[in-house]
Length: 285
Ligand SMILES: Cc1cc2nc3c(=O)[nH]c(=O)nc-3n(C[C@H](O)[C@H](O)[C@H](O)COP(=O)(O)OP(=O)(O)OC[C@H]3O[C@@H](n4cnc5c(N)ncnc54)[C@H](O)[C@@H]3O)c2cc1C
Ligand code: FES
Image (cartoon, rainbow, N blue to C red; front, side, top):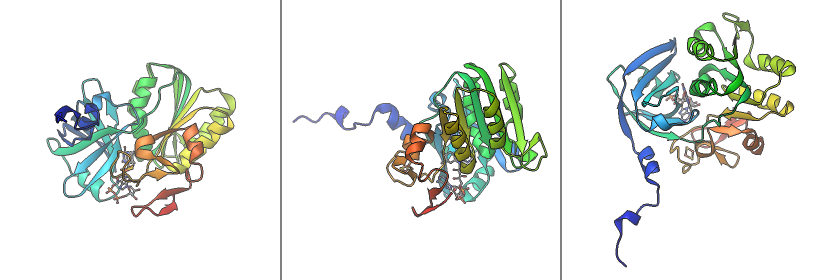
């Protein structure tokens, strides 16, 4: 049989491109809080990303880590927003304008857009993937209720950007801090509970600490509302091969990171309760 080079790979061309490591130049670094920075760069493949999708960022000689996109634009201007928590994120925080980063992706399933009356609940760095989502929903929703939470005022992310985005539509923003240093004292889920008791919604989106997303899921189920949440698990391959991100019979990198109510019901033994550590052992969330 004659060898035909064009038949060698069954992987679609666009997936080959997504999986290839690209070197991007940092165009701008902005501090969002004492521990969080945003890095802007140009990338043609990220311009087509769906809000909620993530990229793998390679920090040479240290590690490769997953991170959501905080900006997605038609021209390819992209950003990631990272909290400094360990070795890789510390090294990333030392990067400056004109330094280089390696990226591959965007990966996974992002948020499905909805219309009508929408509730968005974001806590801590969970607000990151909700930013490009909110920018899209601002053009579709009849009313948007954005519940933004953090431990302290310093850690409240993107308050100005949310205010600016939602100033053009019918929207309400409720900020909460656990220490009461800004907005209402308390947690996002208490505000959600109060809003759901008096108003009707068509969709709830959430991203933040898993216990918070679990409570939001519980509230959505109680009010029989559709729900989408973006989950975090250890990610290595990001393409469904290594198994490090499993939750129940789903792989968060490939089936998520955004999971729907139907999917969360399938993994209710693990969601809000267990995750896997770097060795694959089940540990409490
Ligand atoms: C889909 C997804 C999107 C994310 N988006 C953001 C974001 O927008 N902003 C942000 O600040 N953080 C985000 N994270 C978390 C980020 O990946 C971790 O904070 C980062 O990997 C920590 O690396 P480190 O070496 O600094 O810390 P380490 O000391 O190595 O780890 C600290 C903690 O970070 C988590 N972590 C470490 N390595 C990984 C890994 N390979 N995959 C997943 N989690 C890991 C673990 O919970 C670990 O206990 C996201 C994670 C996932 C899975
Ligand atoms: S990160 Fe390898 S299967 Fe999800």
